Length: 168
Image 1 (cartoon, rainbow, N blue to C red):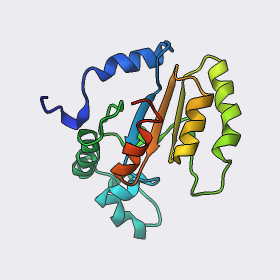
Image 2: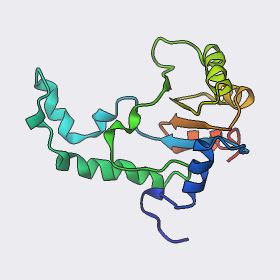
Image 3: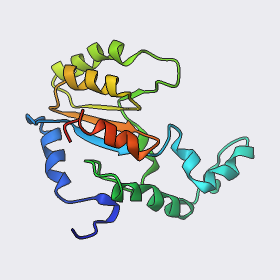
């Protein structure tokens, strides 16, 4: 198979078209990320800002982010998933984010809200770190139509454990 930069296989586009058109599909779109909850910690330039009282426009030079952006996007070359990767720090903004490491509702308590979004005919993006049991719950209670699961992992073994649950 030819090397595809950042794992951005053009065949992924068809899956995104099905997602946005809310077509019936056999599984949701799934993306895995080894980037943590605070992606700004992944950029070397940001470490210099910790001592600043305020972040000012002159402190932000886009080219200072590029090496780290490319490094982060390359995770797509080792993780076979549906995510199309680019170089944009704002990609972490999503409609629903579940952080089991912080105070918040359990996944089971969020399911009715997710179902309400789906019943309203809206596409749903859920970002978080999930146990296999939580992932089974989501897969059993939500329709894959218009669903994108952006799953945060720390190790590739987590990806391997979740693939069968996600029907990948």
